[in-house]
Length: 581
Image (cartoon, rainbow, N blue to C red; front, side, top):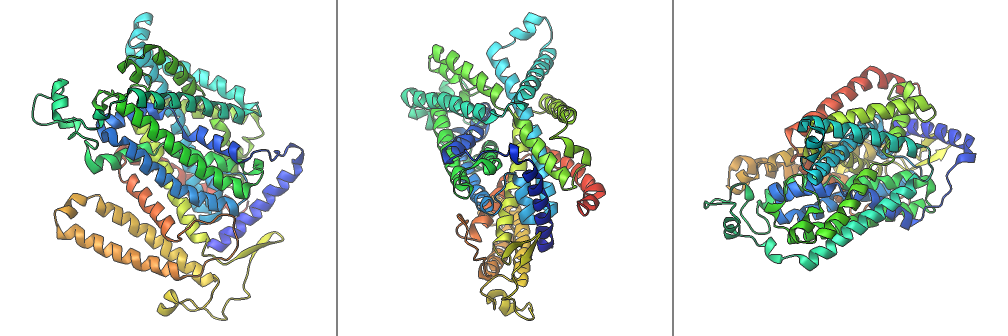
């Protein structure tokens, strides 16, 4: 099945290359070096909107240990980033996670990924609108409703309407410019300047005691008159314990998938097989350090219990008495939020176009790149959908929904690397992929001894199928293990039921991992390979699933409904049409 998917992808790739050759006069110039890609990745990963969301995470979920949440979220993204880096060396073509999924896990996985990306972009725009309304509400208070002599609900609807119109205007203006990525790079510098100022201020005016708060501090602040700290946690650096860190990590994961913007620049990279992997890794490292510094500074300047839900980063300067800095940072904060989502439809249009070309969406969407009318209508519909979502959902719910979709996509990428590395070597011959069969045994038979001691030093169709089946089983077992670990208080209490289940799952996972480890890997030289295969991709899947388990039921319900709609389209239309494209 995987070989058939690879052949079909190769045919479609050849067709796309023919189309690209016909448009050679408009082909992009390879002018993006590693530094350009790093700046681009940081610009999309360092999301200043996270500063609004993180206040609520710090107050109610993690406390000062939110800095650990960002470190864990960054490490999780780094694991997936390494998988993206390897696939980018095998698919030297600009695309997205959709394209990578098509190559690695086939058509169904590609549809799930592409459909998820569409949802992810819509939710991201909704998050931008939600951040705007919160920021305006905090900055002006109730003055908007008082000036207009209307209710706060009507004032909120009016703000959504105005922001939506401004966003559409900005989007239509930027659709015609070829310098959109210069704007994004400038945005990255603005964000880094604002956040760098916050970091420096935090280490100047911060108080380390804010990481060591006790019950007495809460009582003196008039927050607790009893012996129980209640919703404020237990004090100290980790007032909500390990559960708070785990839940906070799931929310703090939200901005890190921004590094995937780099894989859309393969065609413009000077040396893509080197600069793409380096750009991914370096941009993630910088982003993790920036987030760690910003929220270390924030929780040092302001006790976490004083961070109000929906408060903005500039408000920390009011707490330390730096009023002029508050207005300067607020100005930059509003500019960053407004420019945060410039050009988002460029990427969502690209995915919709590719899915329509492959027959997975209706053919009218294949005209989204050439028809101005179709492009405008698609943009209007997407923005209206995002505004509706922003009005009816809390900002944290939108963030959790987007994080859940990103974690699902990352898991598919990690699964794909695990599959492809153990497949028979392939080469391009004409219009199809020819599998090298000169070293294949005359008759391959699956035996218990052959699982641990394969007879061929190079991958064969049988060994590739063994890895495919074992990897699928491991994905299922890792999910079950995460479900069992979700009841970890029972493990600590010595309850034999959960302990037995976890031990059995670990034994099965270890055994199946050993089977994959013993299979021959492809010897095709690549500029970058994921180290410690198969452990690192499996670790990535495990951590991703663990974080997915922390999401709310509302987030799962939203993704479930969206996927149900997608599967109806795929089953009723996509399967038949993709066979003839």
